[in-house]
Image (cartoon, rainbow, N blue to C red; front, side, top):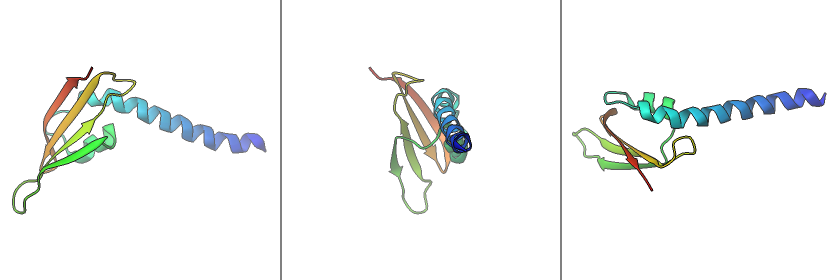
Amino acid sequence: MNSMKFWPVFLIALASGSTHAADARERGFIREGMAEGEVLFRVGKPDHSTFVSNVRGKPEVKTWTYFPHARDPQTLTLVTFRSGVVAQVERKIAR
């Protein structure tokens, strides 16, 4: 009976751990032209989000920031979106 309770917890922990490991490696594969949803799916939620321009009638511009991760140490990733599409990707060494 105790082993039946153990497996769901183990599988959830395993799945969440592998998701975080893949996120940091996927940051290097973000390219211009990718949709915002695809970035969110592949990399996950940003550590910080900023609206650069949010004026009615003009394309929305925002920046997502991903801080260094254990699997991608010392690399700060900045993704700029224009109308929900990646317009620019900057990867900076943070020391």
